[in-house]
Image (cartoon, rainbow, N blue to C red; front, side):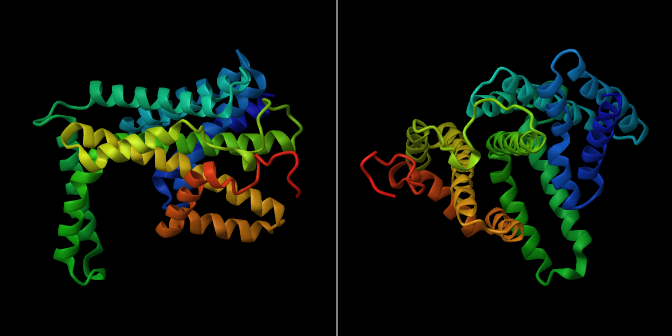
Amino acid sequence: MRREIAVGIAATIVFYLSAMFIPLAGFVAGIFTSLPTLLAFYRWGSPIGYWIPGGVALLGSALLVYLNMVQSIPFLLEMLFLGLFLGTGMRLQWSPERTIATAALLVFSTGVMSLWLFAPASEGGLLAEMERDLKDAATTAVRELGGQIEDKQGFEQALLQIVPALVRLFPGMALACALAVAWLNVVVTARFCRIHHISLPPWPEWSLWKSPEPLVWGLIGSGFLFLFADGFLKLIASNALVVLGLIYFLHGLAIVNFYADKWRLPRLARAFIYVVLFLQQFATLVTALMGLFDMWMDFRRLTRKPNEED
C-alpha cells in the first residue's frame, strides 16, 4: 500500500504540472489530477484515503513555491477536493448524477469564493479585471504569432471583440468544465474498478445513461429568457445554456458509446470518433441535440414495451 500511495502522490503532481508545461497533451493529463485521490478514497476510505491528497497538498505546494508558481496552489487543492468529493459520493452509493453534480458544484463554489476573496481589488471589480487580463493575453498572443497571421490587425480586433462575451460566460464555462472533469474522472475510475474487479456502486452502464428529464424545462426556460430577456436575466440564461449544453452533449456521447459497443467498433475507430465529436463544432452540436431529442426519440430503444419485438 505504501508503494501505491507514493505512486498516487507522484502521478497527481505529474498530471498537474503537465497541464502547465506541456501543450495539449499536458492539458489532457491535467484533467486527471483528481484521479489518484478519487481512487484512493473510494477504495480505502478514511483515514488511509487521505494520504494521497494530504501528501500532494504538502509536496505539491512546496514544489510550486519553489517554481515560483504560488498562484497555482489553490487550483491544485481544488482538484484534490474534487477527487475527495467524488470518492465520498461513490462510497455513499449516490447516483452518478448526484455524485458528479455535487462534487462539481462544491468545487465550483469554492473556486468562486476563492476568486472573490483573494483576487486583488481593482477598478470595476473582478469581471472587469478578468476582461483586461484576457485582452492583454490576446494582444500578447497575436504579437508572438507575428508573421503567421496575414491580417494581424483584423485578427486581433476579432479576438478583442470576443473577450467580453467570454468573460460574461465565465461562470457557466467554469461550472461546465468542473462537470466535464468530474465526469471523465468517474468514467475512468469505473473502468479501472471493472478491470481490477473492484466493486462499484449499483450504477447502470454509462452507455445506458440518460440525463434527468426535468432538465428539459430548464433548457426551455433558459432559451426563452435568452431570446426575450435583457440584462442580468439574459446573462443567467446564457450561462445556464452552456451548462445544459454540456449535459446533453454527455447524454449524446452515451448514445454514441451504446452503438459503438453494439457494433463492436475497434478502439482506434472509437478514439477517432470521440476526437471528432469533441473538436468539430458541428459534430459537437449534433451530439448535444441527439442527447436532447433522445427523451422523445429513444434512440437506444431503452423504454420499449414488453410486447415490442427486437
